[in-house]
Image 1: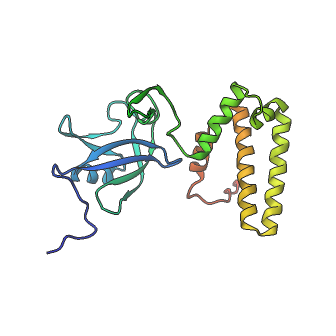
Image 2: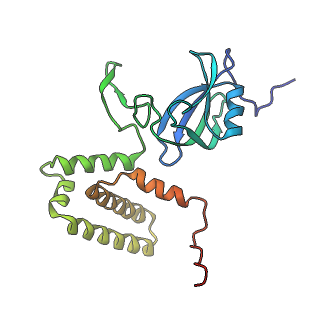
Length: 224
């Protein structure tokens, strides 16, 4: 009898790796192992459970720290031997107090660096905003970003307005390449606004998360 192609593939110990990803920005928060019981408990409670290889027991992430991982969705890879969990973290995921467990860069010699970095978190927008923050705090001659900061708040806002207009014109023109180019410019200058006010993208993602899957129209106030 052939194996059901939908079945998961566990290793010789009955375990399968589970990658935990922040549902808002895609940051890989941690990697753990699940057995069948952990998977079923995760599905039933919508809270991430693992099998502890060291303690040989089932455990719920956050059971001692209170930093639970609330499940938003689960996926499996093409070989059915790795699970991806999109979750909403209630506080730092790493036991060190960091938001995620991946904060050390591997150097050219294959050694883990001592300096903690957040550059593994999020995506390209986070990377750009990180650079913007560095240019704000450590101005660099010849840097366009530094020039904008020197121009002050009004100059930054003027560029956002200009780039928004360019997006409108590109969209009206209907040329795909121009739309992509101008939207990228608008994204950058909008990130400049966040950098100026020192607002992390996580706060924007959280606001979008509040609206996700909800009707777009506000409910009318009773009696109005």
